[in-house]
Image (cartoon, rainbow, N blue to C red; front, side, top):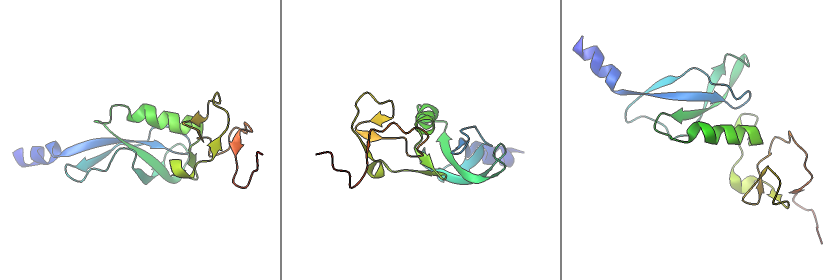
Length: 125
């Protein structure tokens, strides 16, 4: 009995959130020492979307992990299950736009066409 308990204590839980619907999926236990960094993408079956899609991993020690995921999800930073890297985001010319985070447009999935994105090749002169 003690041997099984040792296995249980050497595990750490992670929560997973679907990049398509934003809902929480099935948690996964990882062995200590084999954890992934917070924000890691893992392809899992989403019981709400009824398909395999990338989920964002939130570890229990990630204090702001869920809030960070919700911000990324609500602003539209996930496209086809992938998080668009900040360096690949389009520049935004409107400082009051809710999708503008540090001069970059986080609305990568184009759920809102605000018109402030500076597309490559645009001349604003």
